[in-house]
Length: 139
Image 1 (cartoon, helix red, strand yellow):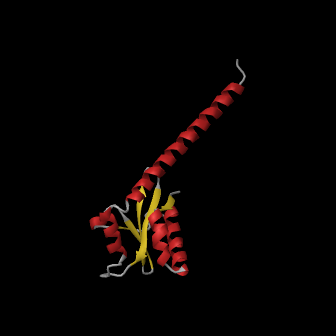
Image 2 (cartoon, helix red, strand yellow):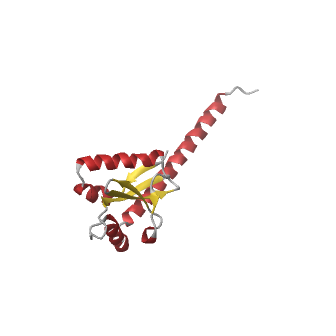
Image 3 (cartoon, one colour):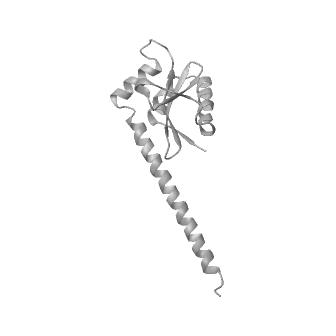
């Protein structure tokens, strides 16, 4: 099952302006990514590589990190076509300004966590095999 993580910028800034009702609806929608990763729609243009979920008038912009099977929520905002505060206009500004770099760092951190977890699991399996072999009577 995939995991879902929020970019710090999204948690710290995007949810300040969302009502509790819309926040709950948004979080329910985000939970769908863990069980149905292809749920959203691929974005185009300057947002190639990103996807979006629609939740009423809100858009959830996210990216998948295949190696760690983690979906990173980069931004949540209102769709207000033509408005300077439109979610896509804001995301474009953040992208061009490099403010979504924290999300890239988060991707790398998730990959490192999963790599270490896999190493730990392999070590535990190897140790268990060694203990079982040691317990076997020799012929």
